[in-house]
Length: 132
Image 1 (cartoon, rainbow, N blue to C red):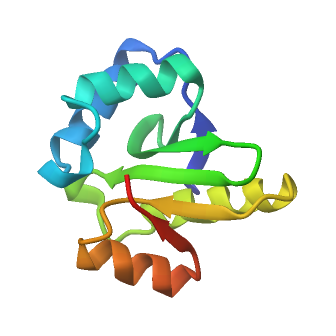
Image 2: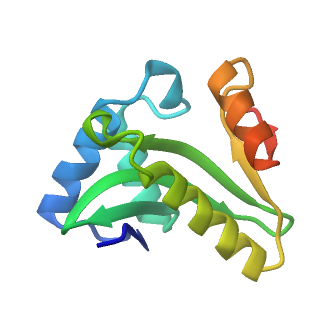
Image 3: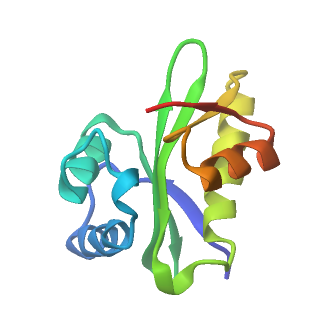
């Protein structure tokens, strides 16, 4: 069964629990400008920019996908520690790229530019890396 990427506007109780687990595994540098994971999840679901990867009815990874007039911006990408290196993050990235391409907009990765893993990810995907 593939990972299905969906927009999360009104998370169920189970979705909220899964999202909390996803961002509990996030490095400290990933959360700003949000003070807490709960604030990030609330803001993302409220404005409709929260996307998540679902497998077997559970959310395993999530990100914010902001649609702007000039580009789409992907930020706060995180996958649960126990499911990393299994393609969930790649599936989220692929779907974000597909949606941006269909909208005729470039996709940009938004993350701390001093994080080497963010630089490497942007370079590997051919994306512009923007600072938070």
